[in-house]
Length: 508
Image 1 (cartoon, rainbow, N blue to C red):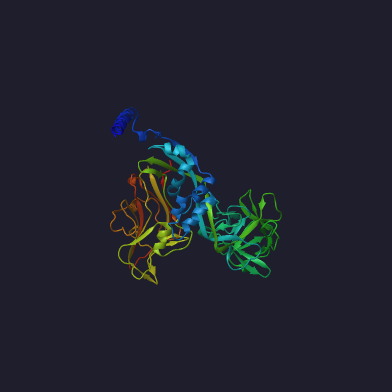
Image 2: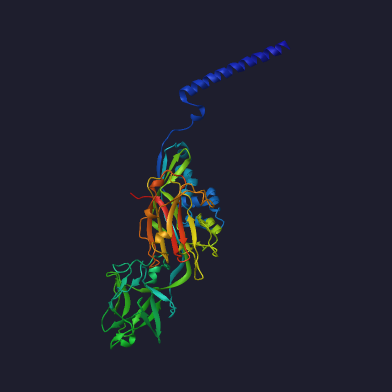
């Protein structure tokens, strides 16, 4: 027994000696080299510059974290947009680089580089963005023409439509829209489809049946006719005023081989061609190498849902600090068009992240702001010939401007029926402590309407006006919300449309 006790005692003394020795070694190591947990931590401040490839967009779309984030939208719209990111190689809609790139940063730079970077490191990423276009479109006709509806005349494979040579002109050629007298009208989404827009609607031609032939009326409802041997066109309001050798009728036949139309004057048998040398269309007896045939496009409702990818790359910078990776360069990107029109505010929030809150009552209305698939966020308190007094706020998702330098908010807006001045009824506000839905009254808000740069729409048309707002005063704030405040009275209730709300760093 004594021998066993002595043996155990010796072991205990040995263990104590080892502990003291280890402690001494630990003190020595920490004193000279730092704490053990820090020995394997690199102290590299690195900067990486990357450009996303098609494969990267596919990784974004299939990443588990991103799939879970998109699934938070119960409407399924964001999940659909996430798959479009992979298919089109661009960010769009609710899929923003600030939210969906962090999940794949490690894969982009490599695991070893990713884990070795310390505070102050940056990852600069170039990416492409796209716009989800849905709604009406102009579709090419293939021989079936009717007097109902109107048509765009589009040179085959060209990017723009034809327009009359200018209001008030009584003769001339059909000019390519986009010349000095006509704004751009056509955006092609593929070889067979043109996006419908209000500008293009101003260049629609009508067809009227004339026995086996057709009358062609320009956008001013004047008849297109030819005179004698001239190659240019004339216009007249009443065909009864025409004289000899002035011919207003045309044969229109589809040429399947060229996928275009032969539009020939019945009087002098000259065919309408677009001349690429002169950027205009006339009627000529013979075709030349520079002549392009004409295709007719007709507006079709709900005919398209496509992604238009911008040719220009954008840039976002992720910086590592004590809170992790944060983005600068793209703080908010809300197209607010596409998908389905929504009036239920829960559905609007789920689909877009925008909150709608009321101050007081909205009377018998069921909603004031709605999400419109074509016109963006659309506010109106007019119903059944009644103006309802309201004070309703459409509040953006929060923006993190902690790492921002000069963030600029931009948006497009249109309105009609507002009172004067318009900013008494349509306003822009900012908060840095809005906590989310239900927090309107508790938050502190600052009106910034007077700081918005741009021409406020006067209500004379539905033209969208580009607006900008410098948010540099809010740099360093982690939570910044923008609110579009709609105010109406029992005598004034505007219709206000807001879309393409984007906040990015100012371009140098």
